[in-house]
Length: 344
Image (cartoon, rainbow, N blue to C red; front, top):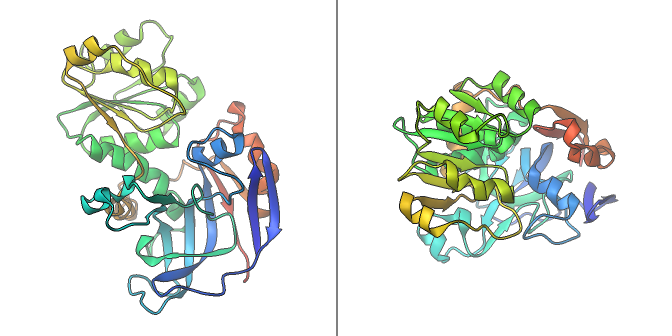
């Protein structure tokens, strides 16, 4: 079968590899139909992704078909269309797993990061991490995982209709975060430094305000959106050192700051200001199994529209040649998708 391997930063290589010839009793054999390209993939290609080693087969935003199942599998059937929960805990005795937080388990293997992912025709994966839908397309199913990051961040922050929420960053993770903050009933605004992304967001979602740093006083813009107040919750989805450190200034007294994105480095802040506001600082990592089902239901019921998310497409055979251009800021990639049709 055909596989695309990232040999080292900036260097992809197509290779014919052996098709899976053994399925574990708890596994499913999966045929890959759609591969969403995310920031993790782009960062790995650029050589700046934390927790990463080479060579690696990328791809964890996937729309797949079940083509065979192991003897003990009861949760999926042959022919099912699925999204994959790519965060696989490897030790059920892990304290985080025992406390219902497998998304941040100490012993965690993420598909396409710690283990080979979906940029190949077929692979096997434990069936308990598959989420089925008879209504959604493979393309929609490939969007469940990126949506889950924002969904988990909103749930982690316990956002309600009483909150004023500002999301920093209007990339795909930020857009998903906005969607679920709105669904929670909060008043929502977005801050984005790129005018084109801000305009895309303005055309895509109806929220309370759109803030561009540098257009006058940033704090004045924020207070104008929220009736003179600062937001009770700020979620930073940029993965930018400068943005994450500045975000402390934008949170109201008694509020919550959630880091959805991450970068390789340290975040510093003024401890007196942090204590004066009695802020709650949270990290948000991956997502929970129930959130995948929550999102699938929301899309099936037309509560979330993903039709405008995909801005770039290619087929699997052209992916290696196309990939590098998606790192170009001028491309304004919101979500790129690779199509994969093949026979075993």
